[in-house]
Length: 128
Image 1: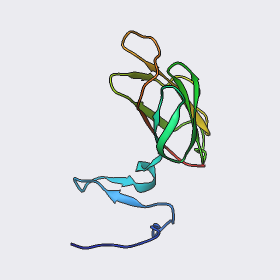
Image 2: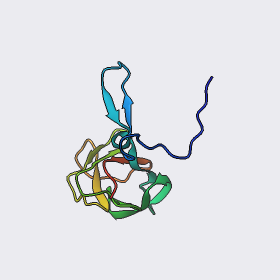
Image 3: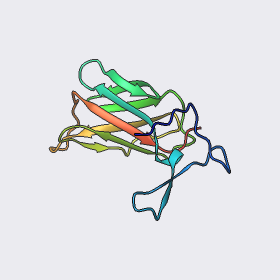
Image 4: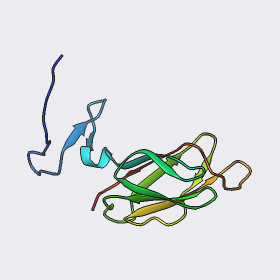
């Protein structure tokens, strides 16, 4: 088994352009574009508390089942792709999305917002 130990990967042509060949060998993907730029796992009941995260400064509890995830380092604009997950819950991400945060609501099957014990979210896009 081979092992590569590096502290930094830079593109040969452009330092911020590293591509990875896909599984079938015919397509390439930008490494930077394919990485999650922020993620969070938090308790959404009672006093909201982050269990673990990367590039998430805090989570704001806006009311029952309504949260805002605040980034440590901003995205370049509001055109990134946030996603949130919890068991048997549909998330409505139609609320505010800015370079510094995104807001979402937990909508249960009966269409009412509710707090959830474990909420997981991630964001993909360009950092500022």
